[in-house]
Image 1 (cartoon, protein in one colour):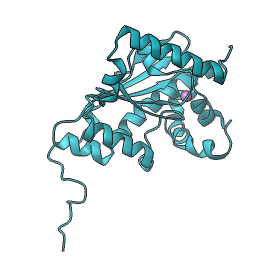
Image 2 (spheres, rainbow, N blue to C red; image 1 turned 45 degrees about the horizontal axis):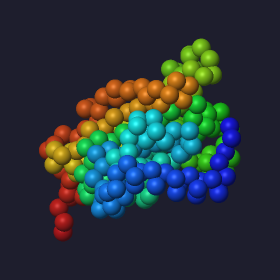
Image 3 (cartoon, helix red, strand yellow; image 1 turned 90 degrees about the horizontal axis):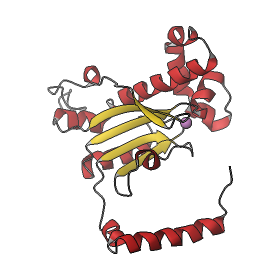
Image 4 (cartoon, rainbow, N blue to C red; image 1 turned 90 degrees about the vertical axis):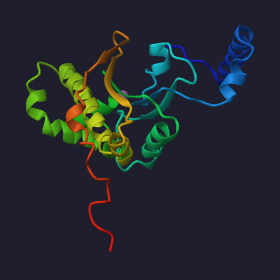
Length: 217
Ligand code: CO
């Protein structure tokens, strides 16, 4: 692949901005007025999968959080603040947890190929593999195992999403966004909807709020 130089990035930016402006003189004015994206996308940092390109969506449509292997980490203040802002302030209607095949993070978890902090970061996926080892190990080849772990990871991260206090809160208030689990196949460019069933993970609406279980003395 031929990569663009920094000079080319800046030059192409100018060309693109001019083109947008010509097509719609209000384009950048409208962008500067604020955002009301209907989607929150939680994806992998991998450079090959900007969801906007794969779905032909525009600036202003998708609020984004990306990290290695698209994880929903319940102690990650970066992720939690993105999630809270998307739900409480932007009122997104859909949350998309999108994994992908050919994911280096999944490979690192399954094969121990990462070092340093990345190895620690993907450890929850290694734990997931150990939980699902019986299912994964019987698959015919390495690629099938990696693909399946990528899918199971999406399912696990959707489950984690329902453990966050902001999601539990909006579920109780019956205004929770719909959650979707997807995998993007880099080999075909196509998105596969995993049809992740979320109903069994949702709290009953009558569940007490976190911290309200004990009377305050
Ligand atoms: Co990845």
